[in-house]
Image: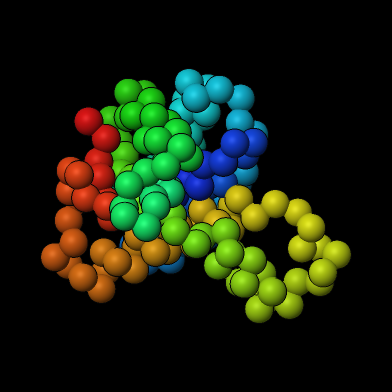
Length: 155
């Protein structure tokens, strides 16, 4: 099954997609934030075009596993996406994805000048890869787990 990963931000949303086997995540695109409804419609359309079987939306959580302001925004986006598509939408802890994306770009040897751009699509790939790795290495991890800090499906 192919998965679509979304790293929501205030200005941009990074989007990544997995290979058909759900093993490797790859950056796909960045969409500019317009409004929650429009963003959700665009994401639902991308998921359909990519033939995704599940949409993974990054949600930031605090040290106690509770969503903060950005985490609640991500949950509202996930709910809005779910209203626009039959594809299941899952929230996944996006802890440290941006920093990890920066490290990946540095290890790839990207010059300092070229590191000035956004990392949104790469952060979405890091988020999605985290989800894929957790589910491939631990078959007992199931979606959804309502109320869990790790994985939650939208109603």
